[in-house]
Image (tube, rainbow, N blue to C red):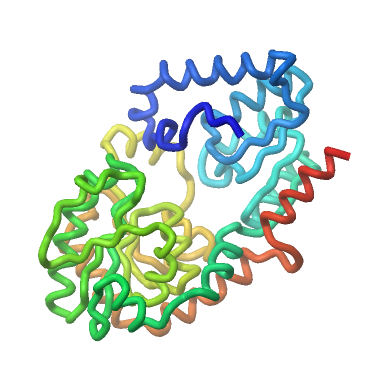
Length: 333
């Protein structure tokens, strides 16, 4: 496999932030189109994964050239810019979705080759669970306090997110932990430099992406940046509070475009606001601490609610990765 650009290079969040790097993304698109036009590199199938802002443009280019387009992980047309589905139906031949409600949406819009394969996180977690240590063993391995409850801090997976979220999350975590005898643990993203996480004697730093689900399984609460982390927390039955802050311009644009009542992916899948959500001006240490107290008081019932999410995201037969591979191999015959 030849990697032309890395995920880190393409990782940008926010309308304003994307606009600042427009020339870079334009350059990459031109490069990809040149590969589609080359006899040596023209593919039989273009397999696109997520990243709709860029990949939907590339899908249109491939469609115009008669190349079959298979798209995995649907753009969130159910959340914002639902008008995109008309273009998707025209330029995408197969849509592979990971949420069951997405399949109905695309079939009704006219994309017959829509396949719900289940969410990939389920098989990842199931494979990992067989190797999980006991809580005491895990605590000893990572120098964590085995007799305290653990409060996890997830400020984000991008440098700009960590810069916006970390200080406020840390302040709330320290305050709550001191009052409730918790150990506060920052979960660092390996895509963000370690230097972005200032050391604090009141907080333990944890940096190991392969062990995050195991850490969640042994923890009691989380301060969660909105995104996939909230779904991971729900699957690991970790209660918590969902937070998010972005630039004022990005928030203003998003508020006009997004029509959902929730921002947290876990809440969207559950269909209700189980996780409290604190956005923009609501995202303060005081409000986080307040909501953590409420969630902690209902910890047991909160966890019971989360058990249903597995059934909702699971395909009865076969793993998501195997089913996706079968769809692709079906066109290689």
